[in-house]
Length: 71
Image (cartoon, rainbow, N blue to C red; front, side):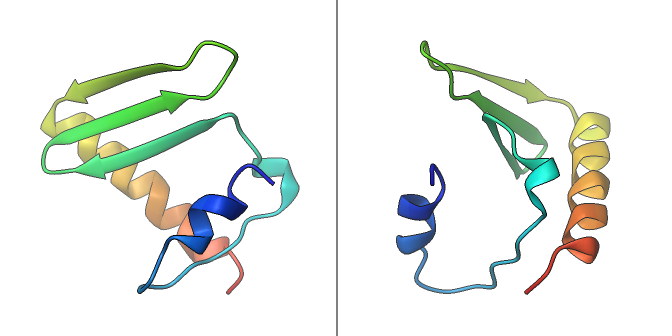
């Protein structure tokens, strides 16, 4: 799968899995007061949103998904 190579590079931390209904061609990175969104289509697109409120919103969404994901 698209994520299997990435998962193999993770050496520490916890990985959880969502059902296939959550499959998406995007990856989102939340850090500092920023959200970076990568869209993996034929032409890679990425953008960064620098906004504390947006970062908190994405972090809350991540926490929600994390709690329903399986170990």
